[in-house]
Length: 157
Image (cartoon, rainbow, N blue to C red; front, side, top):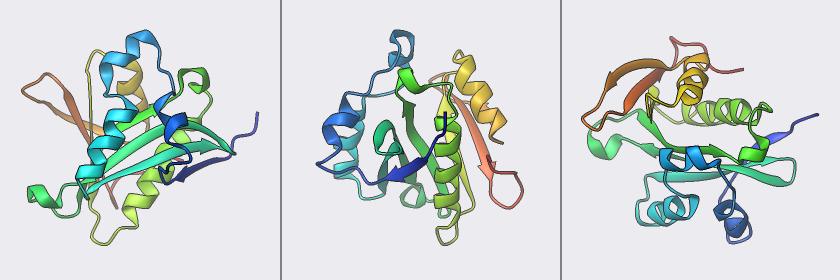
């Protein structure tokens, strides 16, 4: 199966599709809904949302944030990243992550990207490690933080 992954703006035209993309039951507790995330981004201009497409079909959603307002210029964090469970395991997430890292890397002064995930989610842990993210610490909520620095780490291909 050929994949043609792209990242697109979240619009009124794809909003309904994005809010209905399903996860597996055991994945639901790992991230907020797409609807909540899109609403959240409408209040914070440094939150950026993207629809993940394979060809002309919406297959996922992501949100990244500039950490400049928190005093960390050049740093970004991926707050949401999901692929429809029916399309997982096909390389779509890996390609979307590569596109996102390229997009962020092209921003002026971009130094690196943080990601946070549950340490009991072995799929996320392995996926981000394979992309070059290095685990740094558990936070006060028991979430694992990992980081990829631009210029020193290989990006996902």
